[in-house]
Image 1 (tube, helix red, strand yellow):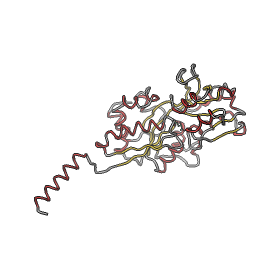
Image 2 (cartoon, rainbow, N blue to C red):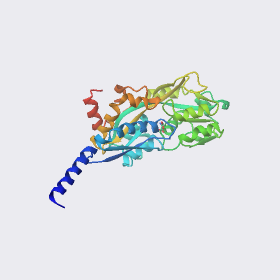
Image 3 (cartoon, rainbow, N blue to C red):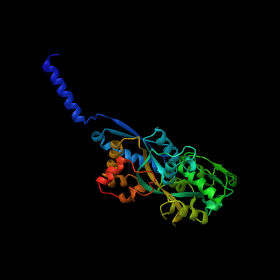
Length: 322
Ligand code: GLU
């Protein structure tokens, strides 16, 4: 090749590279979410959509994985199988502190908080014909207590322990994953399901439109004590009129959904993800109805017990959000 042909080829290559915005480092990140009819899965999808709109600027491609839920995600972020995960605030606390479900694994000192998202009331849905008016009426019934690995199941176990219940207190305790439980309720295979989830959610919509169901109140002395003793629990209500056949609000307790990562994920990657979401907050809030109520000043602190990742902290301080 002559010198001039070669330099033309080089110049063309350089031009191509700069016009494509190609980066020294192309990174693919994976966010662990939950079942497809929950709110984690579409929330992860919304985050990735915003990240992927500006891949040309930062070189990051974002993908979402449907998983078993919070506890699975925290373990996967800990061992590096996932870069990010959505997790309930109670399980973020326990993973960081090595308590409860995470006692055997020990503290995850590499766990980092990124931001919080929507509130998640502990939600109990029962068949209207099952005679279940309050949480205590679940005794002796057929109940889906949730799949191992879900945050819902973990929180159900905590509540059962607070009440002194064991699995023997149910006629049947199933471990269906969140996306299968509404169908099981409506097919009459179980009387009730529990799901710690944002509202509105596809799963609760399914359970309240495919058959006659009621949302069940979760209150009383044990619930009050859980809220009083633990920073990550709060009272919660599911608004009336949100779901078919449930005109009145339902009292319960709840946690918050949070996005977590590991200190091993680079500052640049976390900064780019946070910037993609916060620079497009209006759009983010429109991507799922459960996200519509988010407030930036709450997202940077509520329900976050692990330290903020440095990349997130840098963005928040540059934007003066705290
Ligand atoms: N909070 C649930 C869990 O951790 C998941 C909720 C959802 O999928 O939106 O298992």
